[in-house]
Amino acid sequence: MTRDMSRARVRAVTHQDLVPNPKTTDLSSKTGIFIAVLTIIFGLSCFVLCLYAEATRSQATWGSKTCVYNGSGKMPLLCGAIAFVGLAVAMVGLHMYLLMAVTSSPPMVLVEWDLDSVPAKRLTFQAAFFFVSTWVCFGVGEVLLLVALSVESGHLKNWSKPKPTCLVIRQGLFSAAGVFSLLTVFLAMGLYLTALQAHRISKDLQNTHREILEASVLYASPPRSPTNRMATVAREGPATVRDESTSLEYLVSVKQIAHIV
Image 1: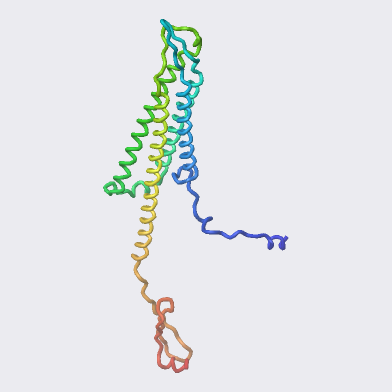
Image 2: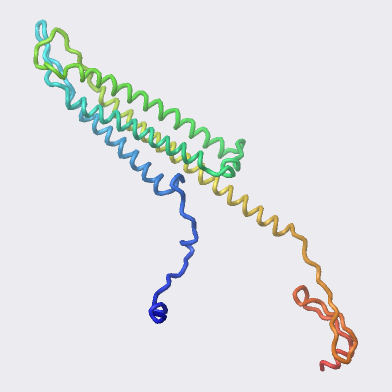
């Protein structure tokens, strides 16, 4: 058993093992990257669904006094509903993650900022711009999709029968909603990258502050004075010897030197 244990290989501890793994709420962690990529995929999917809904939207053929729809509107209704829900899920998920990442940051990371500095003002302006523009584009896109869904859901039944009035959406409504959904996702990514940049700068400031504190503690401590001790030699007079840990000089008497020689 001892021989088997000696043969067992022990993996050496590397520097990578000592580096702490980032938390899931860290913006630079794998979870943050996964949520960012998932948000982009949701936005592109919403854009494609809106384009398909635009291509299959219901149209009406007008006669003398009646009109007839060319379809039931189920396909554009389904595509628009999926795009509506997908865009909402992407926006809420990304902003909830950003909120959790900011609130779970250590207090020192948030206090290190100098609000009057140029980088702090620039990042604040970028964050405000991306936040406001993201929600404006999101609201416009969702309203357009909601209007299109309400129109398309009005003739699911008896769509082939002539009617005195036919309500159809204008051309380009679904496409406009898709463009706004795409803008929403890209602006949200700008907000994410701004928060990530601010988080990295805060970490750098925190590390610099810690190094300054460690250096100040090291240099602020007073130097230790050398301690003297009395050493005696057999059949000789006492000699004053300075401690080897503090100095390399030794004070010996003339008789002790002669004895050593």
